[in-house]
Length: 190
Image (cartoon, rainbow, N blue to C red):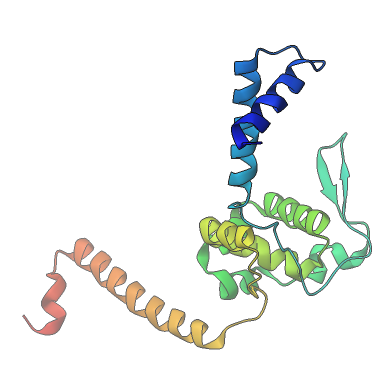
């Protein structure tokens, strides 16, 4: 039997099924399902969300209050790192997020802990990475990459401090010049 004959027999068989479809509709449905099966071969693999540390108990969500709450002291804010740890790991975005909206940050960390079943510090590091650069964080997660957001990169910290001092010096000089009317380049002797 040829492929066309096999498909037409399948179409006739499906036409007699519970769902009364015309042969043309059945053929279109079968072709759509075949196309879908073929296309699924090119879909990315399932997410690999392996983390180094896991929780035995996860934070609980109170539906009445619409809030996450820790169930043990190891899940509370004291168990994680402070606001300066966020600044050193992921920069100013998570730092200011924690400063301006501490409750929203805390709820996000508790949700990370509950959904991913990780410890407090790992959840904080993931939350800081998400706030610092959501696009890269989502890409890494979708691809199944598991970067270590928790460990401090001392070389990166030194480079960030050097660049920050330079940029803040230029901004300070600009503000001074605007306030006094001096030339920005007067410091160079011109």
